[in-house]
Image (cartoon, rainbow, N blue to C red; front, side):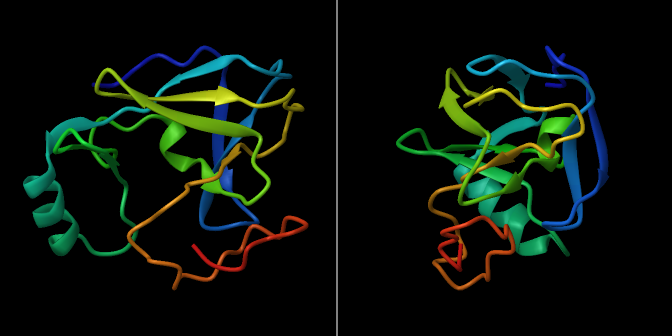
Length: 138
């Protein structure tokens, strides 16, 4: 499921981690950016793929649905939104989709970030967002 974005984004080197998604134009606050590309799979298949994956994991698990979105398949720019403790977007999981919305206006050239919330890292992965009030770990 590769989806169309509502605003143009560019993937390039991030100061936070690896590659990031950046706004190529001003994006107003409270606007939908689009749906993350990927493949809906069972929770069991997601765990199997994560075990066999080397490097970065691009998996979003849906609570109470026994499914996940594998964002390493049918990729779009939203996959590259990095974590921040002071984000400018948020992620909404509904209708078997991972949607992204802006929390506030985003400047042209600004990196898009999202607070990932709970992760499989269980608070052991150091956070590199650099935001004031950073929690320190994911």
